[in-house]
Image (cartoon, rainbow, N blue to C red; front, top):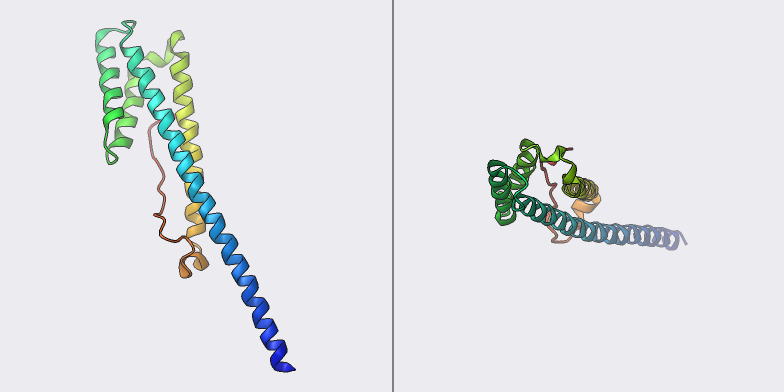
Length: 161
């Protein structure tokens, strides 16, 4: 009888461990999906911001130097490689603030786009931090519950926040 209870106890422990591991792997999968969705949302907001800056620079409202600075920064942000993307987006933010266009009354839509970039970046980075925290737990590392998914990284931009 002692062997039966011991086997039953081991079976229950293994069952509970398996359920927990399965739940954790599922949670990790969902977090990785949320990271991808948040990244896509951030990319959309960055593209929208670049387009608005380029549109503003081409309207003729600004002086030629400001227009050229904004147009160059917007073009660099849109065409930057993955390695230089954060630098290019930060340069666009700096150019926007340096030209003083953030204080003009007609810049409301662009200011809203800047704010949306800030929110999308924060949301993305929050999800990345949650994912990384879960991936660094011993159980997840030991049993490789994250599979082959790459470790997500935060996005660090000068976005005016």
